[in-house]
Image (cartoon, rainbow, N blue to C red; front, side, top):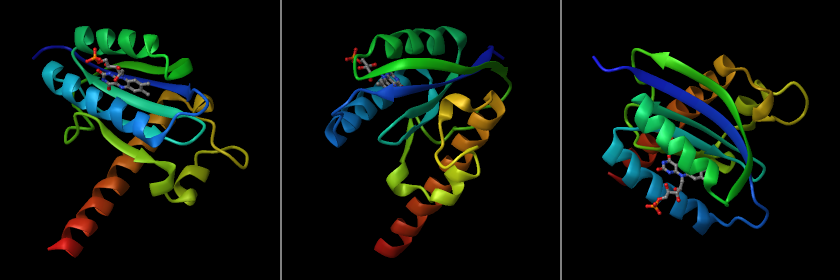
Length: 149
Ligand SMILES: Cc1cc2nc3c(=O)[nH]c(=O)nc-3n(C[C@H](O)[C@H](O)[C@H](O)COP(=O)(O)O)c2cc1C
């Protein structure tokens, strides 16, 4: 089996970033990640991004290098880089949740004060939060699908 890693980072969106910008980021990310065997999850609030990338070290490192050059965010901080045996975000080339979709009580459990700053998270905490967001997001999507059926 080839080596796999999970990289997590937090960054700050530049001022004035619009929902259309986020949609463009996601569309490009999903296309490229699919080509490179990368899975992951991106969480967005008006104030920050928190993202996990999983895949081969070459693919993940190359992707992160591209992400660091992206002018749509600043101040990227690496939260974790670990060798993994198994993917956690296997259903997503890049899953996505914004705080608008997220229950405040989920986020606040990870915050020391009144607001969550992902830069303060440990690698374990960042991973747990992203997993929790991914599960909540999958449930929400299932409800929408069931309601539409
Ligand atoms: C918050 C954020 C997350 C991103 N996530 C990814 C990603 O998961 N995969 C990826 O290839 N690029 C990601 N990017 C980079 C952009 O999507 C970048 O424009 C794209 O990789 C370049 O694609 P292109 O060369 O096809 O234009 C991200 C950028 C930002 C700001």
